[in-house]
Length: 336
Image (tube, rainbow, N blue to C red; front, top):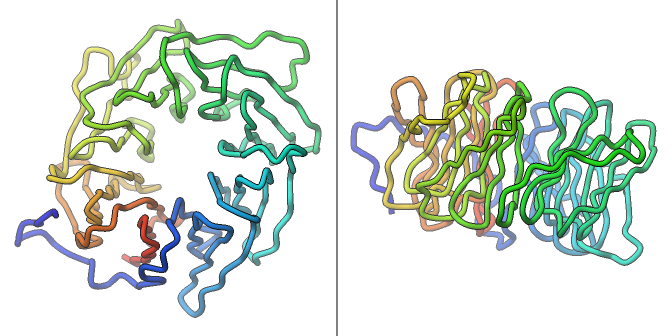
């Protein structure tokens, strides 16, 4: 386990324990206004305001993925349903797969649009309720809307398809690179597209000329990424430290080395950048959560090591509250 230096400032004892070791893996955490909501691996969301926690059943089985905006949390499940839940706990089934195929990828777009996948098919429901679909070359590994316009990146085996859902009959642009692409993200300015790979590496493209970039050096697959508030850095898990790649220049990380902070004997499992400050929260496989000041690498301990791998991290919209969840179901909220 991580043994933090004795001089490290700690706020861990100030965290409010929402649930402890209830057994259900926490796969995500979001905020609806100021309320932290934990996404449980089985069936339900756990609303955790300070005064009372509420469990809301949203699926008839496992929850595989989640995403949120200020008004709703959208979840995909192994019951073949796509469900939206608002801040009052009201649920709406946005889509239901007639063959009950798993919905394990979901993304939110402009004007209320939502995208999800079932096998090789990427679906989009526009803000007006119109349905679109696109068949990828193989099982969809990740979905991400572009920050501008109405365009969707669909990651799959051997590359990414860039699809305009409203351009009927138009062939999507293809970005090709051999291997299994399991996640996709776009820089906030829309200039770079990055995928997480099955092997311990990232692959990327500068979109203006489709020039490749490869980011390696990890000890395990990268399962969590997060952009800093100004879009200048991409924080990543997958190593025994927090790794941040520079994207503030025209070439992104091409020819540059990453910045590394919070060296640990345990592997980083989740990252979450502060929404307004140069700070990133990093969770590790031994249960440690650190807040890292990106200007100088200064550390604050937010959760002590206890052997529970950190599986979810999230900041409130103003960045005053950090919510943390583990694979064993321990949920905590730290107000700064």
